[in-house]
Every structure is written in structure tokens, then in C-alpha cells.
Image 1 (tube, rainbow, N blue to C red):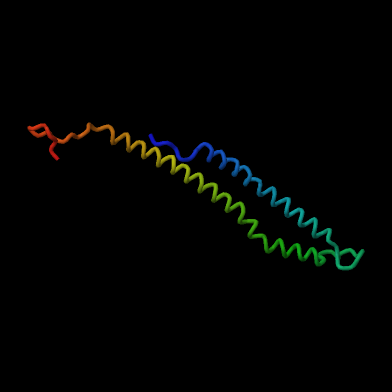
Image 2: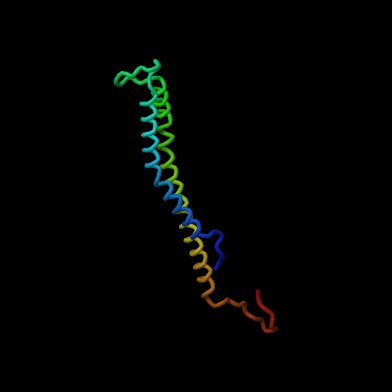
Length: 128
């Protein structure tokens, strides 16, 4: 049987750790959103000591909101890309294992039949 070129157990271990880390995206995004909201509400207005009117954000809050809006799709991309990469690596590893097992089975299957020997001529030499 051919020797493995990769350590399947090691690959699967890394994929498990990666999946575990990727599963924390939602918590991180919630914390990010809460921090942005807190920063925006703490930013105040343009006038020193003035309290913002209800629903009237100051320029820093507006800038934070613009930043959040423009980076929203980038943040949504991270878990989607991670999930797709993990799934692709797992599928490739499974195909690698399957392919190696298929090659081993083919080699074993080819070894089962009796060898075909060329006929021998009357003078003892092999016919070709």
C-alpha cells in the first residue's frame, strides 16, 4: 500500500480547531456591534458640554455608522469564507483518502490474477 503524503489525522485536527475558532465569529461580531454602539453614543456632539438631542448623532457617531455600514459586507464575508474553506479542505482530505484507498484496492486487485507467462519455444527460449 502506498505511503501517505499527508497526515490525515493532523489535517482533520487543524480543521477541527479552525471550525472551533470560526464558530466564535458571531460572538465577536456582537461584541463589535455593541462596542460601536457604545462608542457612538459616547461620542457626544460638536458643542463642548452639549447633550445630543434624541436621535441626533454627532459627527463621530455619524462617522462610526458610515464605517460600520461600509465594512458590513466584509464582516459577513469572513464566516462565509471560513466555512467554505473548511468544507473544501475536509472534502479534499476525504477525496485524498478515498483516492489512496482506491489506488490500493486497484493494486491489490491487479495482484490477484495468476501471472501470464509467455509460451516457451522448443529450444527453451520465450516466445514474444
